Image (cartoon, rainbow over all chains, first blue to last red; front, side, top):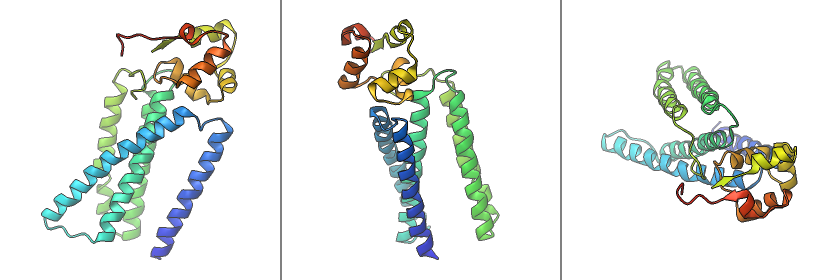
Length: 160
Length: 67
């Protein structure tokens, strides 16, 4: 079962990445702005990963024991998901044409829904309803960040 | 970095999509450059200027104070 999760997830992720690139290539989407956005997103994702490492270290100090594999899986999830979300955020912020802020709310809705669905599925699979409550902090943070960004004046000169 | 892309484009009756096709980037990239949210590379700036038959300095205006 674990093999299906690990290698199935990897295969689906790689296929999604490959098809995404092919679709973007057709629209001349793999240009320098694309490179800039995803390079910046990768850089941002490391900040989230470092924060994740500190949270795990804090948990260790509080005697919450996690296995090596579980800790690595959590860090991998943080790294990849923050990379994806940061990339989407920078893309939207850099290329939105009119009504700045409107696209941010759309992106926020997608992220919030995805997080909620993820935790609901986790609750259903594990049979522990408390996992649904765990969705509240990330959804609240997502809303707070979106409200902050939407109220900011768009920045210029490659500072997204 | 300011630019006159929108102005030159409308003078030439050119859409963002057409300009993007000419210089080989996505329409979203043209939006980002037009709205001054992204500074293009020298190569892309040169290609854009060439489309309008202008020099880079005529299309892109360096605003030292904004930097």
